[in-house]
Each structure stands twice: as C-alpha cells, then as structure tokens.
Image (cartoon, rainbow, N blue to C red; front, side, top):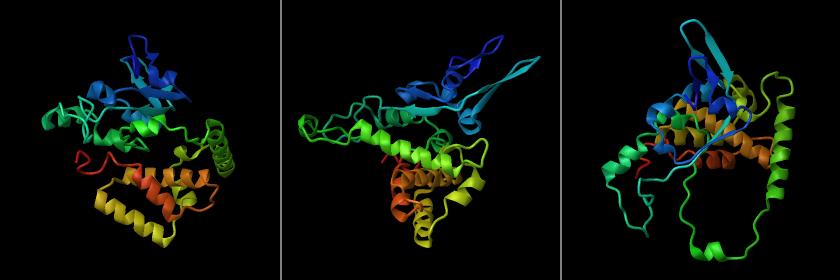
Length: 232
C-alpha cells in the first residue's frame, strides 16, 4: 500500500509521489516479491489504477526506477577475494525475489565489482559532473527535437513500437549482432525493445544521428541480469 497506494479512500503511494522524478529502492531483494511485482504494470503503463467496490482511482506514476542490491545475502558473491558466507541455495532464494518479468522492465543492469585501494586513493582526474551534465542536456535536446511532433513522447524511454521502428533503424551488421545476442542470451522481445532504446540514447550522447554496432554492443552489455544462468 505504501508503494503503490491504497486504503479505504485510496491515497497515492511512493510510485505516484515520484511521478516525473526518481524512485530509489535500496537492497531490492529485501522487499517482498509480492511488493515488487505490483510495480510491473505501472512501469509499463506509467500510471497505477486502484480499484474499490464503488469506484476506481487512477494515479500517474511516470517515474525513473533506480534500484541497488547485493549479489548475495552476505554481499560477497562472485568476489574472489572475499569469503563466501552464503550457500548456493541461500543465494538462489535471495536473488529469486527479483523476477524475470520485473528485470525485463529495467533498461540497464550494471554489475559493480569491488574497487581496489589503489584506484580509490589515486588522484587521477575524471570527467566532472558539469561535463556529464552538458552531454546529457545536449542528448535531451536532440530527443526533444526528434519527438516534437508527438504529443505524449518527449524522450527515448517513452517510445512505443512504432517510434522504435522509425527512429531506431539498424544497418545489416548491427541487425546481425543484435540477432546473435538475442539467440545466445535468450533475451525476450521486451529486452529487444529496451536494447534499441538504450542504444538510441547512447548514440544521442555521442551526437550520432545513426545507431552503430558499437552502440548496440554497449546496450547489450547493460542487460546482464536477465540472461540465462546469470548466477554463474
């Protein structure tokens, strides 16, 4: 109820309070699976409907979902330098709280490995937040111009199948690369659309008018958790 909304006189939940903003869920598998599953449709439709005996209420829920999780209850799964404190059954049960259909609706999955001390302590200058913001602002400007003729579409994440076919056209080599990835990694049709949307955004960040094989490859790498056997 707190996440989706509800009550005798339905009130908006966190997903509606985060409308046009970010909803951050820390330690994702610590939520009950039934709680996480109710987000599937709002993530797809960008609105949530709460039904009662005498009336129905629909709240907007166009939010960006950002979630984090440890790879195991102990936090050290796949870390060669740390002791394994969880059994395979415990790890499977822990990660099993995140269903495939929910992962399908998350555009980008990033696995973060432990950072060595040498990298933490070095003084190398990285790209600043100001520089990153400039690139993102330019990419959003490209998208605003691209979708100016569409009333309810303003950026790549809002594209439907029709828009994807129009704005995410691929060369033959890129199609072959994507086909191979789909077959080898057993990715779903929804994952196919997500890869194209992400690759379109990667191209926008590089100010590239066309999606190349490099953009497709990078987008595929960002979908690691919905592969068969991602537990290793």
